[in-house]
Image 1 (spheres, helix red, strand yellow):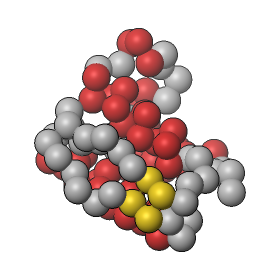
Image 2 (image 1 turned 90 degrees about the horizontal axis):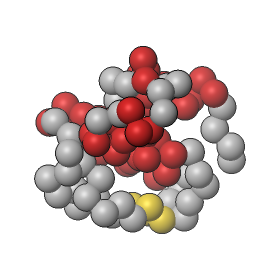
Image 3 (image 1 turned 60 degrees about the horizontal axis):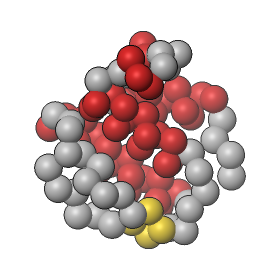
Image 4 (image 1 turned 180 degrees about the vertical axis):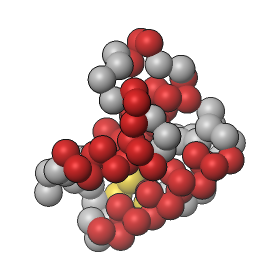
Length: 87
């Protein structure tokens, strides 16, 4: 199921980068690039989501938010996810 623009904007807002939505990836910090890549992954249909160190460059708040989003989106899609997040 394709994500609606409103849902995508919500991901950007929850991860604190709503003001970066129209910024080219090369102009973003590594942590911001990581959050954008994460959002892109969540916008695709999946049966299982395996992310390699998805929170390695994030602060504690964004790490928690990302973990919550992964769990919620996997549940919404009826999919599995690797829930071992390493920093």
